[in-house]
Image (cartoon, rainbow, N blue to C red):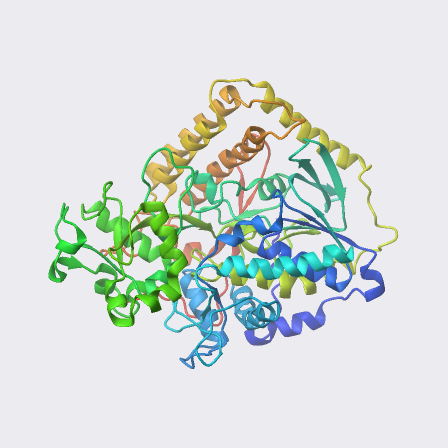
Length: 639
């Protein structure tokens, strides 16, 4: 298989500008003849649907929520990066590009990352025009704060509700197009398959989550904006409904899945408190601007934090990483938290936590100032834990948060299936092996507002809107519908003894233990065998109550967990195939004496691209070699 990333020629800073000019255009009169399907209405999906409808295309948008406002994008807290250099502290498009390439441990495409940095400045203007209430300085200018992996302040924020406010901006733009009739909105509708005709994506098969009705929808292109797959671990910071099904079903239709083993473990989450939990809660990385991370110096020190004097505390991030301190990237902060807890210096009832302490910041700036920055986050922490973070340190521990892997896409955001695109977290393209904080919102909105409106025209311009139409009566739609119905009947007929959640938890424990914050070859081989056993158990013993023709959340979960199990196998294969440590992929066999990741650029500077070969078959690995012409591959250091 030949992978063509379609990266434009020419100097890095000119690639996107020249590429936009060279792309084919669809004239305004013809745009109304095309129908585009958008699956998912979070930041990437809502932005894309609104922008494409504004251009004149007909859009069908699908969400499994009752409203696009419930997309998981709403949960993002800390901010969105943009290279505006408002602080006059040395930021630039190139510095954001460099920080992102370095933060991703040199495992991302230069051209994609530079474009992301370049269009970031436009996102803020767009959001402000939509009324997004970013924090402002006393003089009225937009405020910025720092995030991990950067030494400048480039993160725009709305207290700890940035994702919510940005999503409301995109939602208002989407609603305008729904009201105009250019967007047809399908809520409580889940995509269960993508339909290809003559090798091109021409539609999707969905299930109405209220009535159970299986339906087909045809279009000229399909955009998957369905988020990440962190819930393969069962416990994650993702919303419980977040899943991989849309992307995975596309993968099984031929779309390559790239870098699945690159999982981001966020260092700033409320620790697990018991087996009853169904998800974990993120505390924004922005808290590390003013909070200091520490543990006792002495192993097994059970004293209250107030009773531990300053000289008996280990501010380990400040000690090990003098240049970046508490603002090292997430993968570095997470591994160090695990390290000190493994040494027996963890805190709290489970000893799987470290302190995030605001005492110095409150003493320096006053409680009111800290409340203005983080008040809602502090309130959330107190409601969940019963502890007042103004009076005592927060307790935090790493948890699964974001997935850098996803469907392979070229520079135009198109998968290897013509007409099938993937935007936002659903694709692999911009973050390499580790995403910098505040870059998820940036990528989702960049893809939706500023990339896909240009690139999709290049594909559609090659079609004849009058003669190339495909209807849902085509045999391929009927075939896909039947496959979905057959799988649904099979799930309902097993009538075993285990709930879907029971099996999902089993999978999650295996993934976290063997393919989580640290991996090794021996453990990954054990995981592979255990997942095979869970898969066999699932198809023999799962119990899905109810029927298809009704609201049936057990059936919804069963579809999703079946896909998670297969994805888990591929994640393990990907981790086994990459004999190096980089970013969120930390193989214990490949580390320096002081516990830092050791890359192998000679053998592994590539994007892994996995091709589905059929049920029960091992997937085939293809490689997109990464070429670095503008940055030097060096050992990543934040010291």
